[in-house]
Image (cartoon, rainbow, N blue to C red; front, side, top):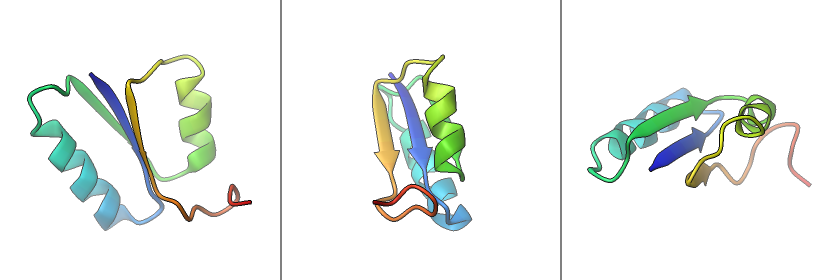
Length: 61
């Protein structure tokens, strides 16, 4: 399973990515600080699971 994690706090992002990497079902984990970078990346790289911060700068409605 391919997973992306998106969070603007480095400590949280690192922790969530590390937890995902330990899961046996997860083959690949990619972390993003910037939601726009994540959005652009997934347009060319399909993922199975996205773990997202609910309060991201520049993308909240």
